[in-house]
Image 1 (cartoon, rainbow, N blue to C red):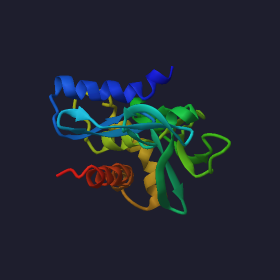
Image 2 (cartoon, rainbow, N blue to C red):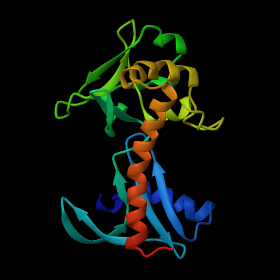
Image 3 (cartoon, rainbow, N blue to C red):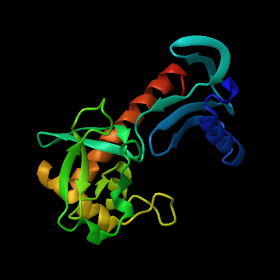
Length: 206
């Protein structure tokens, strides 16, 4: 089983090398719960001794930095401010994305706070509809709201649904839905940018 460590990210990098012919670059694979970031240099992924439970092993694996930020990350709000995006995701909370629902679902909806797990703070947000159903606000919803998702993409959802779902959060923040969505993406992207910049320095990339 230890040979399957990081097999998901490994498959992503293999695709970048085989089909995109990447020779030098930083590879980012984003899913619903996490983003995996790694370096490709001279046509090869960079390797390091694996760590398991904080202990270094003699097994070399891909040097992949996994961040708890992705398309399904939940938005945290307190005192009229977005305090963070992530680390928990809609999947952990058992919630569907707002942008993949029909717009009429969100008529009369309101912003609620919850704890995705018993170990979390209670500032994670969700949208509660008139029928009691709850849906998550995510970076995917924000990107759909702002028209950032191209047609045919797996993450393409309903922009109108996203706007209606973001309205209660925007009202709490005192901004437009577009500005609220923009703040979500800025916070999410800043986490990825920080890790990318660290890898550039660590591997002396140009």
